[in-house]
Structure formats: C-alpha cells, structure tokens
Length: 218
Ligand code: AMP
Image: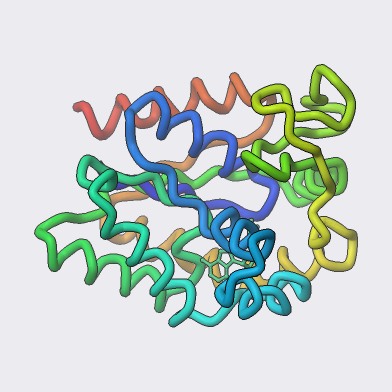
C-alpha cells in the first residue's frame, strides 16, 4: 500500500504518518527528516539542502527525488510506504507516479489534513523536535514528560531553526503556491481523502483510520 500525507507545515502530517506507518507496518519516508538527518551528519546531501531549509523554500527536485527513489529501492519498502512531505510539487508527484508505475504499483490514497492558518501558526511556533528520533512535541498541546527530553528515546528536544515566525510565513507561502495544487491533482484521479486536522492527535488519528477504512478496505 502506498499512502501520501498532504497538508501545510504544522498540519500534523509527521505524527499521523508515523502512526499510520506503525499500525499498517509500512515504511515511513519523511523527506524533511531525511534532510535534517543528513544535515546533522554533515553529509554532502545535508550541506546541499542546508540553505534551502534555512530559507524555508523547497530543495531542488532532482536532489529530493533522487533521495526518495534511493530510499524506496531498499527491500523494507516492498510492502508499502507512507510518504510524508513528499511530493511537494507537480514535478515530484509525476516522478513518484512514474517510479511506481515502472514497478506496476501506484499510489492508493492521499490523506489531505486540513487545518486553518491561525491553528498552523500556533502549532508551528510552539513545536519542539527530538534531535535523535525526530518525534514532534508542542510546548502546550503535547509537552514531553520531562522538559527538554524525548519521551520515546530520551533525546534532546530543540526548536527547528525554520520554525521562526519569518520562516514559517515563507514556508506557508511556498506551500500554497507549490504544494496545494496537488490537492486537485489527486482529487481528479479519485485518490484524495480530506480529513479535518483540528483537535487532538488522537481525534485526528481516529478520523484518518475511519477515512482509510471507508476507502482502501471497502
Ligand atoms: P519539513 O520537515 O517537511 O517541513 O521539511 C523541511 C524542509 O526540508 C523544507 O522547508 C524544505 O526546504 C525541505 N524539504 C522537505 N521535503 C521536501 C520536498 N519534498 N521537496 C523539496 N524540499 C523539501
């Protein structure tokens, strides 16, 4: 099964995509996490992506698509993938369709998590991320049990350098201009499932499973 999570920065894609991947035993591919890991490790890929991430704009398609295709070629991806933060524009969506088609596969469903801009700004400005396992927290909505430490792995929590007000605005602008057109792209082929992203992580999670059950399993 191949599922895409679509939505603005701060919509909750990362948390929900990780849960769906765990429940359905699929591989979770989050391009933002892959870039941040590469940056932490100081690899060539990380250095290439650094300036784009800092500015809040998309990295080059060739670099991003190459990174995703390489990850997709690993044997653990055979049973399916949950894509999070990819594709981010039409070029990437078409490249993904083509790569899957070549293996007689296709995207099954696209979960579009819809959240108001006011809520997105609130969520992003209070977000903290684990440096080791990338689990997201929020200073008021979902704080860690021990301040500054990840509940899951004990890793250090930090604020992403691109979660500043200026960078958040830029990322939202990029989202509306480049990524939002994908909502129509997948709706036209009958693959889009729209889910209300307001409320708690559990509430949104339940909506997602109801939407998936009503489509994939019917
Ligand atoms: P995210 O964690 O998904 O918000 O991604 C953080 C940053 O990584 C983005 O602002 C981009 O600079 C870069 N990035 C992540 N995914 C992509 C993608 N699919 N295409 C291009 N750049 C990306």
